[in-house]
Length: 352
Image (tube, rainbow, N blue to C red; front, side):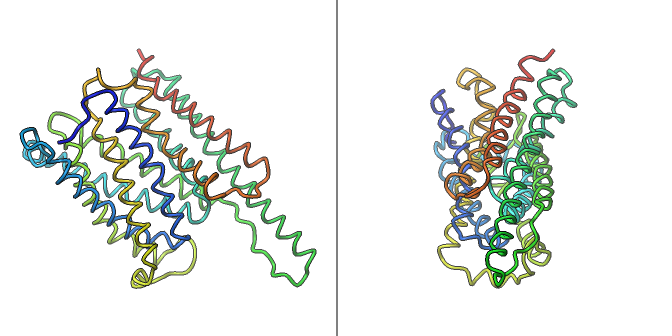
């Protein structure tokens, strides 16, 4: 298997993980806001293609060393089951996250979902390992929850401003079509929180499946996880199409009426996400002497949602013409998320 063997190689892999997980959602935005349920099909194909390609190319890179196939002979069925479950949990989380994005904005849904995910994970870790520093572990979790609340407040200020502008336009031109009632943003917030909960389950299951002497190795883990994603997509997409969070129910067959460009963007999104997954997986369990500091590793592994949110703000103008209050709140969200991640990363270092 192709694995990083130097400190530089590890850093490159972590940066790939950050970019892959931070940028894949940009391809969703590039599909011109098609229903996210249809994107999920193409995203799944991208994940499967990338996982299979990586396993049979990079996972067999040096046949004289341990390959991903050899690892399957050494690992246990229980470990494989954990990784398979991680694939299902991820797909549920990702569908909920895309649902939250469709009713709000990418720059809002991602920070809320992952703020809750990192907060829950930190509390979970502290319960499992009381030796962690409680001030850093629980304080970091609290800071992350406050960051999520600020992101929600920023979105509320945007929709209220848009509603006020529409009402003012109606006064100027009484014949103009009345604006719909302002969205409170609560639906998107709830969907993002649910996504965060399932992302916590995803990371916990994946950790269980790849850890230990008989854990599933990186390329094999990506392959098994893709099977879980593929299998659950068959069930999840029809469910969300029949019980949509936005718009009317649609039939699966309309997926085949999408433009070729939209299919391509969805598949690329899956490939980019899988590259990010592998970037993180190949660094797991490496010798400590080639790994960066624990804080650096944690920050690179957990900062992707901030990159996604930044793309939403800067590239796609999701807060275009928003009041200055919204930008201040989003800036505070970014600062608090970074601070919360820093506290959580230091909890093991300053524990008892």
